[in-house]
Amino acid sequence: MSRHAAFVLLLSYGIVLQLSHGIEVNVTNKADKLCLYANLKVNFSVPYDVGQGKTKIAAFQLPETAKSNESTCASNSSSTLKLDFGAGHSWTVNFTLLGKNYQADTITFGYNLSDTLLFPNATGTGTKSVTAKPDITDVGLNTCYSCKSKDLIQADSVNMTLSDVLIQAFVTNGSRSENITSCRADLPTTTAAPTTPVTNATSAPTPPPTTPTPTLPTPSTGEYRLGANSTACLLANFGLRIGYRQGQKYQEINLEPNATQASGSCGTNSSELVLVSNDMTVVFTFLSDTKKFSLHVFNVTIKGVQFINTNLSLWQAAVGSSYMCNKEQNYTITDELNLYTFNLQVQPFNVQKGVFSTAEECFLDSDLSFLVPIAVGVALSFLIILVLISYLIGRRKSRTGYQSV
Ligand SMILES: *[C@@H]1O[C@H](CO)[C@@H](O)[C@H](O)[C@H]1NC(C)=O
Ligand SMILES: *[C@@H]1O[C@H](CO)[C@@H](O)[C@H](O)[C@H]1NC(C)=O
Ligand SMILES: *[C@@H]1O[C@H](CO)[C@@H](O)[C@H](O)[C@H]1NC(C)=O
Ligand SMILES: *[C@@H]1O[C@H](CO)[C@@H](O)[C@H](O)[C@H]1NC(C)=O
Ligand SMILES: *[C@@H]1O[C@H](CO)[C@@H](O)[C@H](O)[C@H]1NC(C)=O
Ligand SMILES: *[C@@H]1O[C@H](CO)[C@@H](O)[C@H](O)[C@H]1NC(C)=O
Ligand SMILES: *[C@@H]1O[C@H](CO)[C@@H](O)[C@H](O)[C@H]1NC(C)=O
Ligand SMILES: *[C@@H]1O[C@H](CO)[C@@H](O)[C@H](O)[C@H]1NC(C)=O
Ligand SMILES: *[C@@H]1O[C@H](CO)[C@@H](O)[C@H](O)[C@H]1NC(C)=O
Ligand SMILES: *[C@@H]1O[C@H](CO)[C@@H](O)[C@H](O)[C@H]1NC(C)=O
Ligand SMILES: *[C@@H]1O[C@H](CO)[C@@H](O)[C@H](O)[C@H]1NC(C)=O
Ligand SMILES: *[C@@H]1O[C@H](CO)[C@@H](O)[C@H](O)[C@H]1NC(C)=O
Image (tube, rainbow, N blue to C red):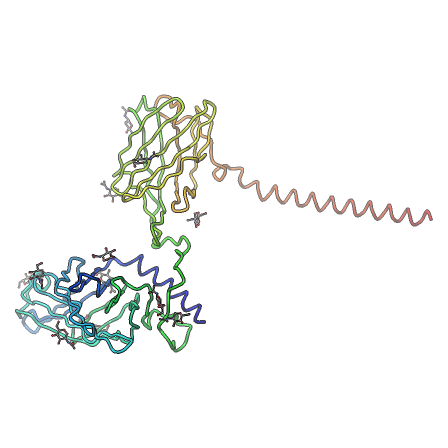
């Protein structure tokens, strides 16, 4: 059971890493070493007076741009995370160390009603402050407190909703621990009354299987060509999605055709299509042996990281025709990179009058694919008949043999 729990925690840890778009803070001590780490999201919901007995609610998030320079690791038994944002607002958490555990003592939220951006038409002015005691206790020293779940903290009438929290106070050796103490809400519900919420992620967290996080919409189909309409030498229509792994993160990204520039070159034996978008640069190199062509090299650079396979043999078709595959295709280009195509049609050689020549369709598209189960069925029944016949023959033979004795 504890193994199971550890696995789930490990998994949730991976998800925390993937989904955190909250603020990330590294607080360093006098020796310039990491002493407090925080990565979290906070949503605020603050009621305030707007006159005539009326109340409005200001709802906002802790911005990623909040300043953390007033955070301190004053001693090795107490430290403070202070995040200043907007026009005089701040969110502060105090941590104290108690033996082998640490905890968050108080959360203080100070908000400036004079900020007309967050509190339009407020009758009050100046800074108000509320405090609350969070349920972040008994966190093992040298472990990160992790809480993916939402945690509603009410301070007077103010609501603060924390989520995707990863905090380590009292970092000892200058780097964040891989060990996690999970909050109760993150623990699997099946384990009634979790006893020890402390666990370890020591067993090298091998990246979880390719689990695309939020599913992307199907990419739009781009129409790319090299050369003017009537004299185009290369045509390529497709929607493209790239799935890639960087460290422990697996991400998927669509190529946006309307923000993509196509360039390249056509040759007799080799043609190249280069697609440049904001997120990536993709280079397709096609080879031709004058009879057939195929995609030989796929080279993509995403955010400075290059993935390449120079020995492919995809999208094969006769020179003078085009290759087509309308169904979604999934190609493993490298261990770290998957290529998905949608509504694919390419012709890298011998384009006539700027239009695709007859298409050779991929197997999945062809109307023949429905024949497969039928063929299997026919083969099977044939086998059964064969077995039956040989059985009958065998029986007759043995009978005659018996009678002749
Ligand atoms: C915090 O430190 C980690 C590890 O050194 C680094 O990857 C991350 O970018 C830092 N974050 C910020 C906001 O400085
Ligand atoms: C915080 O607010 C944003 C935007 O209003 C919303 O998308 C998000 O779901 C909220 N998060 C939580 C934990 O309530
Ligand atoms: C705070 O949360 C409680 C419980 O969900 C809700 O009843 C209340 O209206 C919220 N207050 C504000 C100011 O959002
Ligand atoms: C933090 O930075 C702000 C400006 O970014 C500055 O005004 C303030 O004095 C700094 N505080 C500390 C304690 O360094
Ligand atoms: C929390 O830190 C603030 C300074 O940021 C300090 O004034 C306050 O006394 C501390 N509270 C506790 C309980 O340590
Ligand atoms: C502020 O009050 C003015 C008039 O009193 C009103 O026209 C305006 O819509 C209010 N603004 C907001 C954001 O409520
Ligand atoms: C996790 O905790 C165990 C025991 O507390 C410790 O031996 C190990 O070094 C820790 N691992 C990391 C990566 O901090
Ligand atoms: C980590 O696991 C080891 C062995 O499973 C155990 O002895 C140790 O106490 C654990 N550490 C923590 C912090 O749970
Ligand atoms: C060139 O191709 C585009 C898109 O296929 C089409 O809209 C346009 O009419 C063509 N121009 C000529 C001169 O054929
Ligand atoms: C690209 O197309 C998408 C929808 O297909 C649209 O939302 C987006 O604004 C377009 N971008 C540009 C730069 O035209
Ligand atoms: C792969 O593409 C990048 C540009 O995105 C280029 O700099 C690099 O030379 C290419 N590599 C090969 C082997 O073609
Ligand atoms: C694509 O193929 C890889 C490797 O075969 C597989 O792990 C992954 O689940 C596939 N993705 C989809 C969306 O089918």
